[in-house]
Image 1 (cartoon, rainbow, N blue to C red):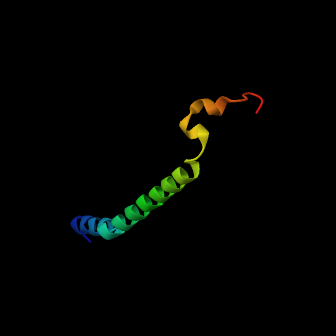
Image 2 (cartoon, one colour; image 1 turned 90 degrees about the vertical axis):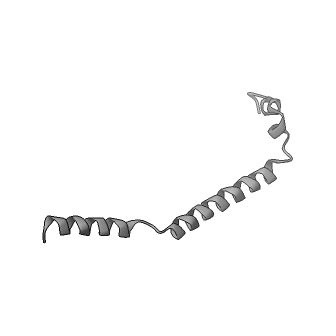
Length: 65
């Protein structure tokens, strides 16, 4: 094999390892939906907590909680 053929083979091999655009899109869509769901769930759980809206509530009774 010539050096040129080896270089061509390396380029082809490297391009085969790259994920397709559809694969990248699916991974990013999954990541986006995962973080959106977790953020929404956390907001739903913490919405009625007093200390979420008033930081002074965190220190009531400190250090003897």
